[in-house]
Length: 73
Image (cartoon, rainbow, N blue to C red; front, side, top):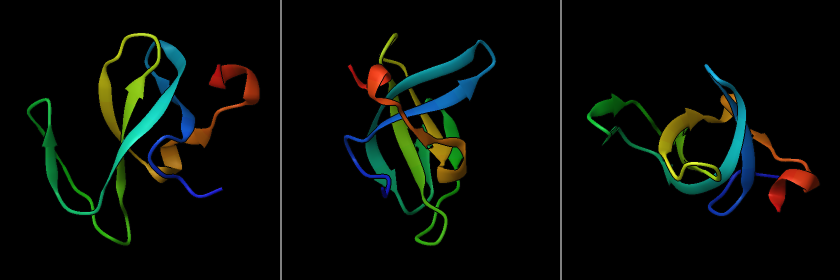
């Protein structure tokens, strides 16, 4: 399934695996929380929101996996 807005995903953090939803797909360079992220049509980045904390982060598709059914709740 292609990654898109609303997709439930999981990713690794220094504290372990976490999960949330994709809130935006970026295809050009952008800033998030004072950090510049590089993105393009060929290598987009996805802004994700943690289900636990509501914090947002940006990740490449390779860092995200679709969440299992149990984690989508």
